[in-house]
Amino acid sequence: MWRRVVSLPPLLSSSNSRRLNQVIQHSQFVLLRFLSVKFWRDSVTLFNPQVQVAYGFNASQVFSTQAEEGVSGARRKPFVTFVLGGPGSGKGTQCTRIVNTFGFTHLNVGDLLRKEIYSDSENGSMILDTIKEGKIVSSEVTVKLIKNSIEANENSRILVDGFPRSEENRIAYERVVGVEPDIVLFFDCPKEEMVKRVLNRNEGRIDDNIDTVKERLTMFSELNLPVIKHYSKKGKLHKIDGTGTEDEIFERVLPIFAALR
Ligand SMILES: Nc1ncnc2c1ncn2[C@@H]1O[C@H](COP(=O)(O)OP(=O)(O)O)[C@@H](O)[C@H]1O
Ligand SMILES: Nc1ccn([C@H]2C[C@H](O)[C@@H](COP(=O)(O)OP(=O)(O)O)O2)c(=O)n1
Ligand SMILES: [Mg+2]
Image 1 (cartoon, rainbow, N blue to C red):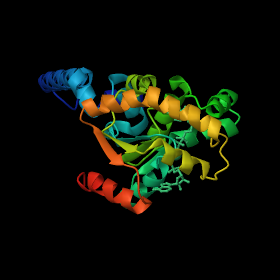
Image 2 (cartoon, rainbow, N blue to C red; image 1 turned 180 degrees about the vertical axis):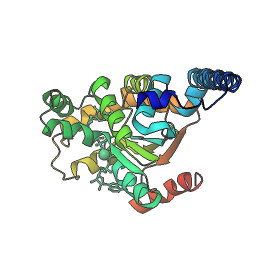
Image 3 (cartoon, rainbow, N blue to C red; image 1 turned 180 degrees about the horizontal axis):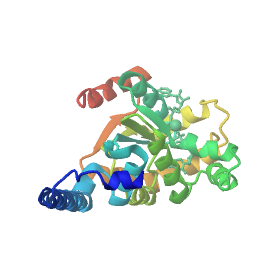
């Protein structure tokens, strides 16, 4: 059999075979040049700090996202709204309405922390003690929970309710997540009204008692007001009068989101 094959006449003459080799070598050269130019361009784009800020990623995140999602590209940055206000100012109540009207996902940071207490996590008892005392949980724990929830969320509109409660919270979020919120709502409500609402809340919360509420109000004035000032200076703050009926307050919220549609 071997003899029969070698005895067959050559398929190409030696000059044709040389020409074919040249064509193959040239094609390999063109392909390699194309691939190296494309790689260089992609790298320059991905490592450009302006591009990273605009799209809310850093290069390492993009590479891991590409690995997870194929070559279709990085996920779009969600529209993030922080919702601030003292205890009982009506954040949760108004968030529910925004969700129903504008299709946002509601991340209630107090709920994320309470879930940790009941899920037997390593930080559970520390979170329980901190909430009972009316203090703020360390940013390291809170920001990780928020980041995980944002990443697990498919919706492109997110409300982060009850965060940041301190400058430490704010700075840690910006460092870890790498982007600022798009807008910030602040429900402004007199202290006596907030106390009245919290004491009537009736959700069985360990922090809805007069002693803890007093401490939470002190924390709010000392730690949260500087955050509100910060966003006000940046032009991101929407201060909303938090008094009146739920309907009246939502009437004040509506135009903020309607304008974004
Ligand atoms: N405009 C309002 N008037 C009276 N009670 C309200 C109003 N908005 C909310 N509440 C009630 O006050 C309590 C605190 O509201 P909530 O939305 O939980 O505030 P926050 O999340 O800011 O602590 C809840 O029992 C809620 O039903
Ligand atoms: N960013 C946050 C948010 C909440 N916490 C803790 C401390 C807060 O008093 C409790 C409860 O928060 P939650 O947002 O549910 O409270 P209110 O809705 O404002 O009454 O959780 C925190 O430590 N850091
Ligand atoms: Mg709430």
